[in-house]
Amino acid sequence: MENSITYRVYGKYALFSDPITRVGGEKTSLFIPTYQALVGVTESCYWKPTIRWVIDAVRVLNPIRTESKGLRPINYGGGNDLSYATYLADVSYVVKAHFEQNLNRPDLADDYIEHKHYWIAKRCLEKGGRRDIFLGTRECSAYIEPCDFDQDKGFYKDYGVMDFGLQFHSFSYPDDNGEGKFLARFWRPKMVDGVIEFCRPEEC
Image (cartoon, rainbow, N blue to C red):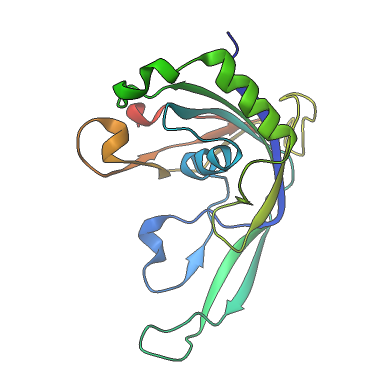
């Protein structure tokens, strides 16, 4: 049975921020999308509690550029505050993902029919997703469409290896890890000729 999809997601801006650095209102995007953000994009396309999405790889198509904007966020004490956010500009990615059975929901085991979920996910992808697509934050709206992973090699096709150091990978929720704990996971991503292959959350 087929259980994987490949899609292109693109938008004018993206903000993949490290949750540790968001304290104080200033937001600065990481240079590459996080695993957690791409899980969110994929779940916005199609989500069921029966399955869990696993992101296999992402291809960065456009040059990595940043753009800063002044913001006036609402102050909880009343009025507005001032802050700056640094976004990624003109972003486009090709994502490869597959789904697995959610073993933490044994009550839904009868609903795990790979063939059914694959074709529903494929139809949702062709329609642009079931829910609105965002790249990191609500203000960074995006579009999603099916494609082949190697259809476009992108700007970094012969760039070699880029190391991004230690950065945020994903959250692990109590109902997902079976440990009853909320965890933040980190890893050291490397981009080879524009492609980043993700490790699984439990391997972080």
